[in-house]
Length: 212
Image (cartoon, rainbow, N blue to C red; front, side):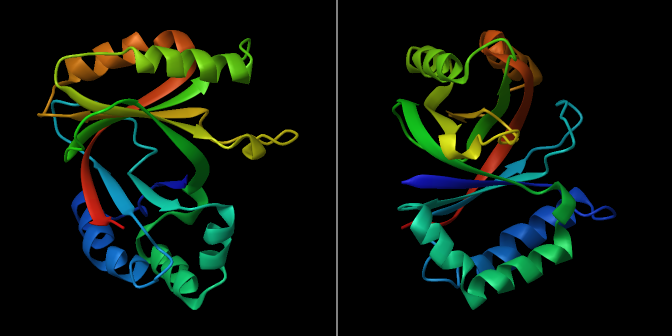
């Protein structure tokens, strides 16, 4: 299985509430019309006065496929064109980032509706293979209060070609059993800071739109 992770930014002028409502209710219905779309999950960042956030990421959409051929099959359909046309209503197309990744579950447990997502770029002086191996090893032995489940999403090696590379070298997802505060976010980010020159942490509500 591969995970097509789309990182999106809302159109300028839309409130977060209108953006998230449209994405969850209107756009999701269009995405799930296609029989080629399997499990589809939206992660909606939580914005409030008690949490700091980096505002270049307003949402994360994930769709799982058997392989890249299955993903290409969707891209060739009318349903996919409808999806793209509707994205123009609420998404800043210039800011969209697509990462094709493989997921590694490092902490087994229940999926919850509340999660922390950390986006990571490796340090320039670290080899990609070493970064990935060390990160997965760390994540496989990680434990923390309120943590139910954890995964590491690693971009396919094919995404590193010539001068091109994915927007992020790894995405960590932590499913939590209850809401946490900014201190918790900072502590988890600090635990993994040695692996990365750049991180963005997002607390999100998870919306499983469709599961197959």
